[in-house]
Image (cartoon, rainbow, N blue to C red; front, side, top):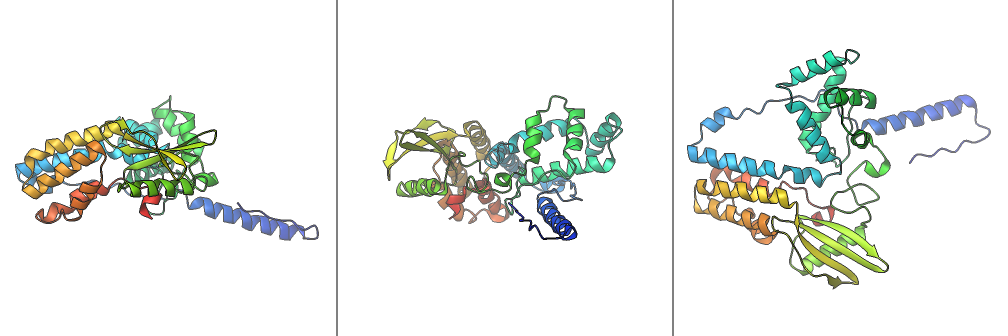
Length: 336
């Protein structure tokens, strides 16, 4: 927060210039969170490369691609509360038209007061949103908002989806200090934690996992307080749901709850199982089996250890599977 103290003997011109400089600084800070102009839309041309594959490789690549997309909602859900609803909203309204130019022309016909450049700003925000799978930058962890003003954004949305929720629009434009970047609450926002989690809570959860020889790459932490009793629930992403009895650790009750993102994990497992008949060697087969167990029961050790040496024997495509395992952003405390 920027504060200024006005001395009673300062001249009005000096005060005016000082306030002007403060305003410029505030505008500069705000611009850091505005979607940049000129974001290009580039077609993903894979037809030729796909045709050059064997039928077996095509089936394998197809199911691995589907597995990756089935897990995409998890990425957005773990970024911010509004990321997934925004992605779903843009998917709905943009999929309703055959092309981006057709979407633009439809909006401009329905809303003659809008300028083409304003619709471009709206679409540039959508592009950056999908590029980052949410409304925070992958590199820098800072929030970005549309470059068009809020009224224009609302007008465009209402023209194609009249029942859009106003709260979602408010969330998209919210530049409160606690929403500017990904961090521990209240310094920032993180969908890895409940809003009442402190850095000390997160470190304690990490220490508990370490004591169990577990890793936290696929976890989230929620905190509840009843009287003097603090409970940390570590939610573990897995297709199978189960909750272990609470354990006392350094004066805090800790619960391991499996089944976070269960719906998406089940879909990922199904696609990986579909890919199994099309593996090209035993290394690839064992790799997929490790991943399937990982997404089914939430255990990380076997899959991560195997991923580190998975490139051996896989040829040029070996890196794809390692990327697939690492696609989900990790909690802050797991990267320490």
